[in-house]
Amino acid sequence: MTDALSTTLAALADPTRRAILARLSLGDASVNELAEPFDMTLAAVSKHIKVLEGAGLVSRGRQAQWRPCKLEAAPMREVASLVEFYRKFWEQNLDQLDAYLKKLQTPETKTKN
Picture 1 (cartoon, rainbow, N blue to C red):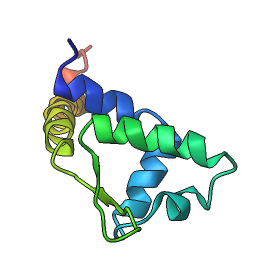
Picture 2: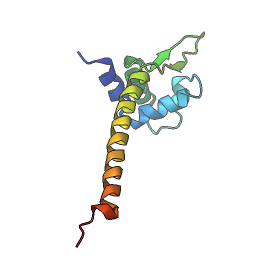
Picture 3: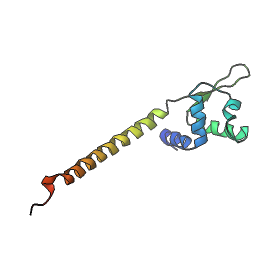
Picture 4: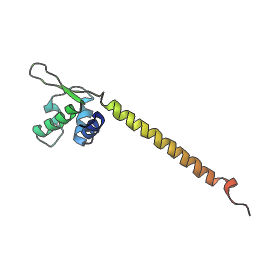
């Protein structure tokens, strides 16, 4: 069984799915509207949407014959937390490296003759 974070990351790994999510961030859209910018079949776009639905990133509603897709951003919170953890980690390490390099450049650390 795959955990939710892995499922979300797998869904976000594809550029087409990220583009679909970007479009949905502007508002709900039908599958036909989502398929417009892509050079692929409607069935292929539907498969991408199903992956996003499986990850909980997209939901589909029903309004008469219109079945709008809607962005569900909550699963991205865990991704954001993971990225934030590593951002802090790298910033701290880069700050330490910067301090070390500055220390190497000071006259006090040079050997006296």
